Amino acid sequence: MKVTQAYRYALDPTRDQVQALLSHCGAARFTFNWALATVKAALSQREAEKTYTIATEWLTEVPWNLYALRRAWNLAKDQVAPWWRENSKEAYNSGLDGVARALRNFSDSRSGRRAGKTVGFPRFKSKHRAVLSCRFTTGVIRIQTDRRQVTLPRLGTIRLHESARKLARRIQAGTARILSATVSVRGERWHVAFTVEIERAPRVPAHPGTVIGVDLGVTSLAVLSDGEVIANPKHHQAAQRRLRRCNKQLARRHGPRTSGGGRRPPSRRWHKARKALSKVHAHLAAQRRDSLHKLTTRLARTYGTIVAEDLHVAGMLRNRRLARAIADTGMAEIRRQLTYKTTWNGGKLILADRWYPSSKTCSACGTVKAKLALAERTFTCTACSRSLDRDLNAARNLAALAADVAQSCGETQNARRGAVSPGNNARHAPMKREPRPKHSSRGTLPPQGESYPDHAHIRARIG
Image 1 (spheres, rainbow, N blue to C red):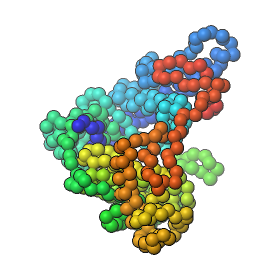
Image 2: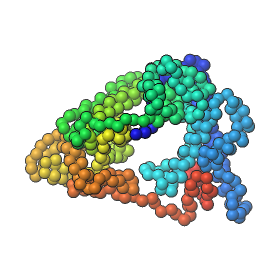
Image 3: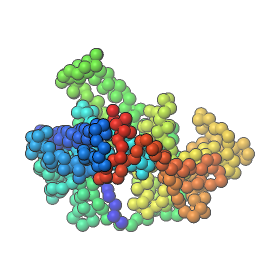
Image 4: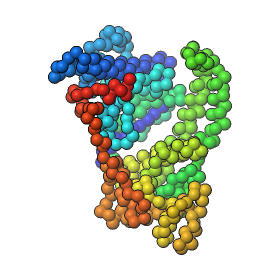
């Protein structure tokens, strides 16, 4: 089967190449802000046209998709950016594509075509806070024969910190094709991520007929229904001392902000302290990413059916006492990785409903407790007097849920991409939330390339 996969490598650029990378990423940010300002100016002009014209067609065209934004940029680039020839055209296209994607997500969210949290109108990118990145889709993008260097448009050949032999072997075998390359900087280190279309050979898990329930938590990262307990590495807690020291050191330096809120040139020691802090955060993120990938890969390659919970992680983070510990586990990332890794390895992932009482239900008799405090780490059934670990009981209930799914004509999803009905033990079924009705005074956003009947609601959101 063909899948789209990313390969990410650390770069080892020279000083001149670092300046070229910074120039390309800065050009992408500049183009993003210019395109967004153009869209907002066109929307403001249309609002003004309402006061003096009754024409059936608008006089001002709003560039809302990538094609219109690119056409407007080609007409104005000599005036707004006379230095545009210094960088690859892909740098400017990255900024335009970012605005087009943001506007499309905003339109789909407003019209109900996009599930999940409501997406707001795009905002300008700050020079001091935005992530530096640039995407290349055309031109010379290849891995050199020594597998330790990559070639990118206008940037030339850049050395890698590690060997790219895995991707190079697939390209030589004809089972992979590079679609794009994105350069970015994290923790003062540059990376290149290749988006690759790969032909993956069919795989079968080591135990295709085995069903495993996975209960995620804070005390233990995961508890499996077979009794295995996966310890929580607690990377953030282990790095607290270093983070505290770096933050205090950064606060003592002459930073870019004054006590009155103004800006000033930061000192060299402030830049040095900021780089040290960013390196600690990058190392912490790499440790967490590595442990989660190892866990999800082992589960997907071992078990044929994995049952997990559809946790509301954003709501759990509102608990200020547990927010740091919950964020350190990466529960949402575990679910995301299991979603595609089970497909790659020939397995199946079943998500229990968010309201399924896996912790309150007895795994032996099915009795559901009315209340179960978070401090109660041992589950004791009031009906059959069974007593076992709370997380193990929840994992076994999740594993038993696979049988209910098999009897209910397969796995389905509701309008909000919710899971199947978890069976007779569920107290709540997934709510089907249809798109909210459109108010007549607000108007609606059209598909790409079409004109708008009204922009009052957009102006109200962007000021």
